[in-house]
Image (cartoon, rainbow, N blue to C red; front, side, top):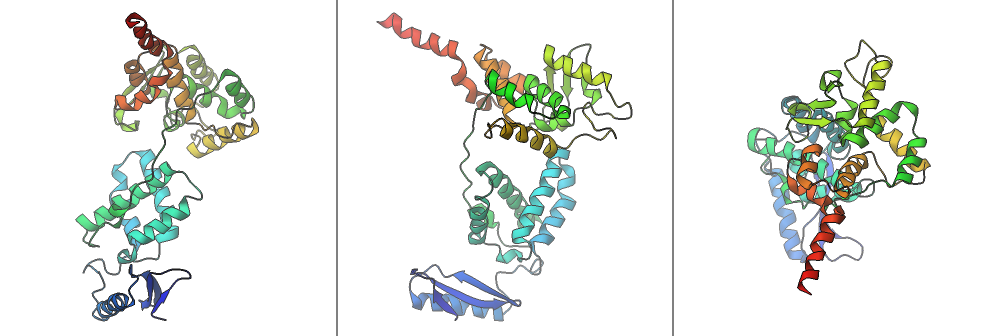
Length: 340
């Protein structure tokens, strides 16, 4: 039936064939007369070959879009971002792959978001939408494959920035359950605040045992700024221990027997597995970075210094830890005593 209403629904939907596929779409109205008008207009546009198509991109699918984006845009990005782009492309293609670009509407994207909410969190969904939006922007503004970016109509998911750190007992329990190869990576992350990608891909050329320093160039940093991280005693010992077992043919500090670095996913899974065994499933590898910043603030280190050590681009990111500075808060409240 061309026009119909879903069970217990008042809005009219239309069903029509387009390029050999059956399309079902809401007319957005409860008036049958208006719905009929919309339906016949769509049928006319299809017949005229002008169903919201651009001249150059009328036969392009999302797979075509993703492939061109990965070929022309992604190579100019940092290695970690390149891997992310490929991952997002693969995930999005499972849902949007066979759709032509003019069929990917805000409504369809909303359906995708609802489906993903059952499996991943808000931040992960937003990153996938960011890739989808960036791809459509190229197709719309540069390649002329479509007439708009449908992602621009989608409101991003609200992210809750968490500050989670370990008690001494919690970390001890998790650490005791870690497989041997991942322990040094975890210790270095906890004592330097480095992101997982920077720890996993740390090279000997970035380490100075003499100066007790790790220096990361801007090209490997998320914020594109060079970062120098001093090594405290636990971190220095981790690196020194790696010297003893160093694979001379590898440039990586942490690597397999064949000299290849561990994968970020492998490190994440190994740490998560230990957390689950310790009955602390809410922890994740990135919390080692939160722990680093939190403990510094709790020890009285000022936020600007924490910002520099963590490599935050903006102080607002560091300010999420401000409430942990108990000494500062006590000083602030003590001011009221003078007014009494």
